[in-house]
Length: 364
Image (cartoon, rainbow, N blue to C red; front, side, top):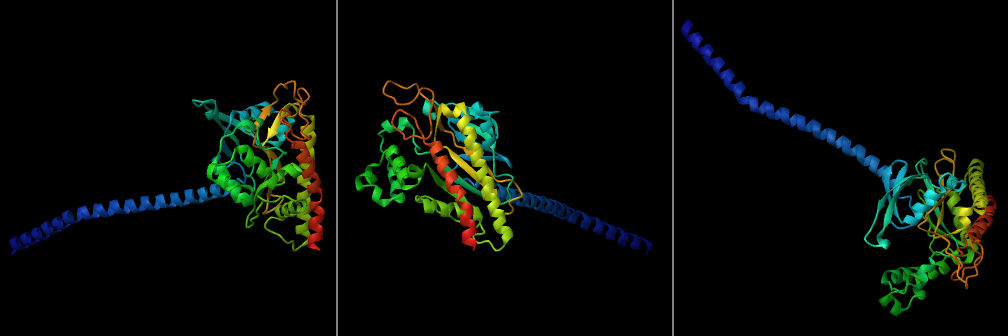
């Protein structure tokens, strides 16, 4: 009997060992799958964090309201890269440490990208993202000057169907059927764009506005009353009607702060030797304030877009330009390189002065 019990006990142990060995692969599989689940959970958490970061960066990058789409690429929370011409690089390098640099994005460096042809040569600038300190940035791009094309483009007779389509969308009556088929020159498009907007009339135009929960169409804003109305809407941001004296006070302080910055900038420009011997074509003023709270970060005005800024050429015998000087206020004629920048800034400042009273009157 003892032998039988021993045999039975051995059988039970043999069975237990067999069961253990049978379940070992299952246990290992469960362990592996458990580790995989944990790894998957960690990956998902990482993706969620990166997704939230990407959404934040995407929200900030959508603040580009003018210029060529895709020209800006985010490098960090407060830095962007910009694909542009060497002319813009020269401006940033030349003005480092000057009084004008106070009104420009910080410049961190560049990457040179030479091309087979001179026209293909471009650089990648690393510059400050001036909207980075704002929780809900309200951004406005104002294109300065009465001329937005280079003098070299006057003789370019290349017909471009894409510009004809853009012109048709802007003003269907400004383009003929033949032009829609064959295209228009860049000069033709640029001059029509200037005449349709306030560029030729006032020396500045509102290129675009981006504010939270606010959509403002600016392409056809031309008349003085329309400009006033649009500037007022920009200053109101998402709060198109103030519901308290504190709200009105905040907007009036904002209006005065931005006005003073424009006045300071104008004084610096008028004293700048660099500005007097360069034409500033297609350059903009970028306005930014925080719609969440005016006191989160100070509102600012920045000079941007210098891809068409060029040093003056030596005048020929037919030119009416004074050697080594552009006044930035007199009408353009081929060869004088006048851009109307200061003419536009004078007009913009005068228009801005009246916005404060409009804010008060419309709330009463």
